[in-house]
Image (cartoon, rainbow, N blue to C red; front, top):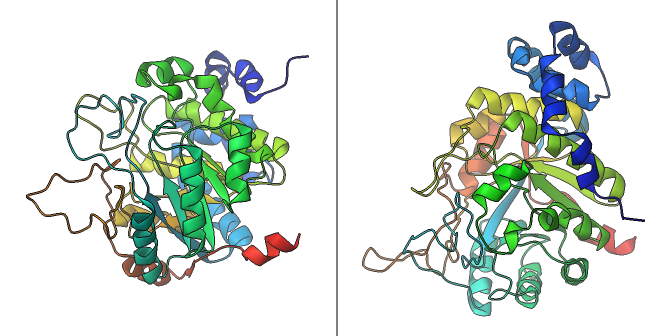
Length: 384
């Protein structure tokens, strides 16, 4: 018998089926969805519908209440550490892409350089980090990433990775080194769009990437973070598929926490124009509707968004924020002082929130929330 996978659910919830459900949305369905405690996918579609825009304030108020109920007044703080910007895949929306034509410097940090970056972030109070690479498994192998995790564990209580898709045994290797989480965006669940924006490399394999988080969960990774790049395709379709994926992972990887991120495409290489730009109002609708559908899931928001937008979204469902971020390898210490006479190190994307860690912490406090440096005690996991 062929093993069951999330692709079977996508076959059922195809574009035509979802669009028919959007067409059937009316005011009564939207009001009923807002009132419900447990939402179905049909209810989520009602809340994501253009017809739900007049009800956005009600949706946002309930999202605020649910977030406060399940997470209190806490916002977890983390920071990314880019290990490498080498990439063998050609994703047209990404500055790291192998054929981007961008001439900025490509580097992979050596052990001592990784340690320097960790020390610099640790000085700022950071206790939760996300290690990132491009899609280059031959140049930046699993052993290298595992070793980077070991180094990071000397300085931080929680270490997660956002790297290329792996086999289950490779995820198990990362888990054995102390990797708590794996972040992996499907980018878009629409296969036609996926094929058009991923031109070459291992990442072009849609099904392999689709099943990666499930492999990570089976391997013992404690936190699985999924998402779609908002702007690549019709977000009203992608958010339904993302919600279905999160629910699927909750069932199949029941020992893992399933969290979501909402990266909005704004700054892209010159060869690519964002085809479906997402407005701030639409971003609010996405986050608040998803909060009603997934009341227990942590929601992350990166420095892709401006300080004003991130501060605005704190009460509406966000539970975790990056702070003081750099999206280039060595951006905190090793290559931080690069002069204008040297070729700058290539960054993955341009950030919009340039505040320091302390400034983000103060902004969270001014909103009446408590910044949390780590959301679990590692000793507790070891005692289970």
